[in-house]
Image 1 (cartoon, rainbow, N blue to C red):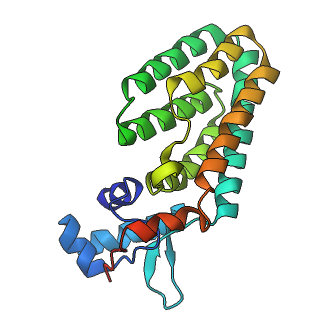
Image 2 (cartoon, helix red, strand yellow):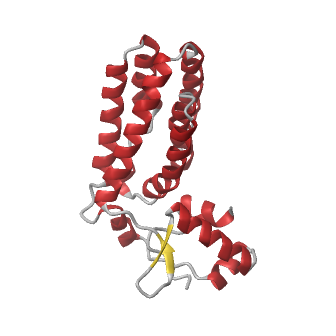
Amino acid sequence: MALRTAITTGQYRPGDHLGEVELAAGLSISRGTVREALRHLQQEGLVVAGSRGMLRVRSLTPTEVQELFQVREALEGLAVTQIIASPGKETAVASLREALDRLGEASGDFSAQVEADLAFHFRLCELSGNSMLMQTWRHLEGPTRVVVMSAAGERRKVSMSAAHHLPIVDAIERGNADEAMRVLHEHMASAIAKLKAAPDGPDAADDAHPRNEAG
């Protein structure tokens, strides 16, 4: 979906207005396609209606950012315990190490790092074998991507390096659920602290970037 990609990669930023005519022209797609895409994006929680009914890219408050990562921590913590209890743990660890390698290869490219980071965390959930867990995590992927991609300055220094993820995999390999959960908690707490650091939360990034009044 072209519009979803434009939002999650930061082409349209939190708070940007989304007008059908301008979007159709800018993305070279029909207005009907835009309308359907906007409907789906509202269901995903990436697009919301403003006070006058005009659609805009959703902005998460600092509280919502905290809640987002707390829910992710709960989901991924469950995934960790299920992987450790699984007879396929050894295979899962090998798969996670491959995801770590891709994360290391993305170093220095912020957009690529975001993609590799999210791929690692989804792989963690996928390896749990819990389909409902995976579906729930997928619902949080879009908002996570928007929050991270729209971050500016110091707030972009979220712990996405392979080195920050390695202790999680090592703890899983040792079968130490408590240690894996502790590292995961620190990882999420660090992300929350950095992404909430600006006085006005994620929207503060807009100060340095004029909003795209597409409507």
